[in-house]
Image (cartoon, rainbow, N blue to C red):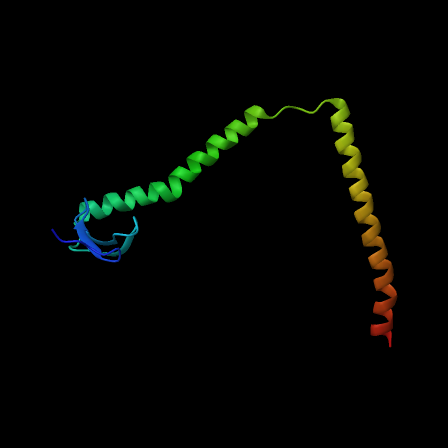
Length: 116
């Protein structure tokens, strides 16, 4: 019976006939090397699965989440709507005053630089 050290490597083949080197200390593969080329049907099915995984599944999940969100949404009552409208109006006024004062300061500086 041979004993292996903690750092010895084990070579085995997985279901797809690829050779995998694994370190006995860790459970994940250390390196992967392909033992033979795939045939075209395997490649096409792998590409289709990859396409579904990358594009179709996220879109399905997004649609499902969107429908769930719309079903959970409710219309605000009058009190809540007025609160939101006031906050939005105050924000518009503050931004307007900031823009006005920036323009007010910018006009004399621009005249000094251009008019001189």
